[in-house]
Image 1 (spheres, rainbow, N blue to C red):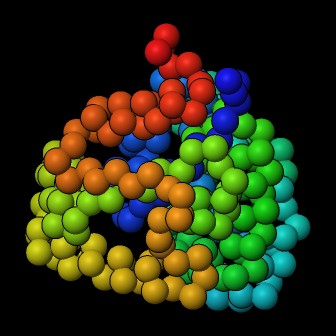
Image 2: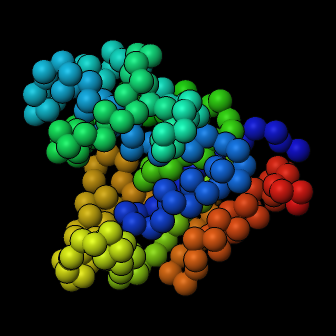
Length: 233
């Protein structure tokens, strides 16, 4: 029986992986690690150093020189984890509008992705972690104890996003969201670096007709099968 395991959850945009991963982590009392936050941290560091986001070489060099850490939340202010850059707590700064506007570009650089992959592996190797992303099981942590790939049609994912926006009082157009979802899928699946795809040994869970609770239970059942006791099971 294993006491400490690493769980990798991958999937396309709006497949529910972040929500599911957070619930699974809470059930297991594990660290919830949305790996996308690390690219936000790099972007923040770039902004702080007054480096132009378009300067790929400088951005990549900076990414290689800093240490980013993700730790369990240290205070009850709504954070899902602590985000540190060289020991400095930047949990909320990485959510700034300036970071939001530049993170997509920064995250495309090979030097940045290579640097972050190494740091993600360092964090994942501690165990007791649920890692969420698009290339965790294939690139970042191919030795994860459990690999899950969440799959849902573009239509279902677009509908979820549309309803989420409506609940937040934001008017939107379903067809525009659907087109954007399909466009992002094409980019993620066909990119040269770490394309989106399930690992060969990943368990694929189709979430079209499942609730969040249903997906969480399916994953917890898989966790139990590899020898970790979950809620007495």
